[in-house]
Image 1: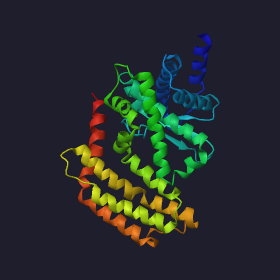
Image 2 (image 1 turned 180 degrees about the vertical axis):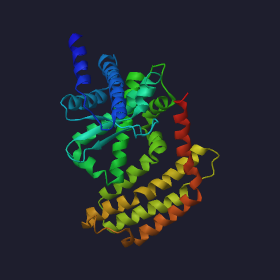
Image 3 (image 1 turned 30 degrees about the horizontal axis):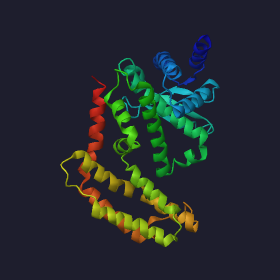
Image 4 (image 1 turned 120 degrees about the vertical axis):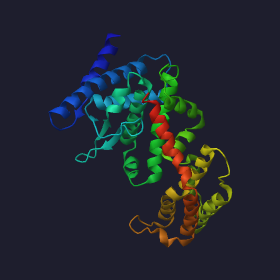
Length: 322
């Protein structure tokens, strides 16, 4: 037990907090550092001492924890981050040293920790997963800056680990908020609902779109198939339901097709014909472009259904202000 407490103590004291500014900002940073260290110590205790364990959570958490212990991964206080559950933390790459990442957190976590500890832990685990993906799949992680599909896959990794953590370590906590309960409930569904709600993406459709390039067919046939997929959506997606959620899911299905279409088409022609990013132009594929425009028109006609996203985020955010 003594060794376990000592390792937690070292974990706290070796954290690197970065930031510059005047005396007031420095005092704010020091206050945050003190409060955030307490949260990290408590999180470490929750994971270490829990009777139930989730192997992936433990592996990924310990990997990132060791990066911090070895001073390879700094933690920064960023007062400009959203004061809300969404956008209150981030993982980024240091400009002067792209081989190193940095995890940044704002005041929202420390201010809400006493009342909603599970939420604070979940946000940290989500950010830890982004760091884990960066160090273990760096090339693809860097590519994701300019690849919308890979970016969404990494975001899905993070929210999935977040849900796994909550389900294993915090499910019986009396201090679970609405968001944490939602993530736990969505875990058996592969986080499909969460990705639709928070990242405005139909994950199942995205996987289907992304898999087209791997089919053993010619470029022209693959492009034709992708165009047909969009035309099928125009025939099958409806907005007749009285349910805001169902109409929102419909608009997200169409949005997913349009939003990722350029990446899908590029991946096909790059794989089949070696077209480079610099040489790629969507207008060179008029049949596909026409289908995209048709889908965009339907989206414009039902654009109000997209408001469900922000409305729901606002409602969720308000529950943590009470």
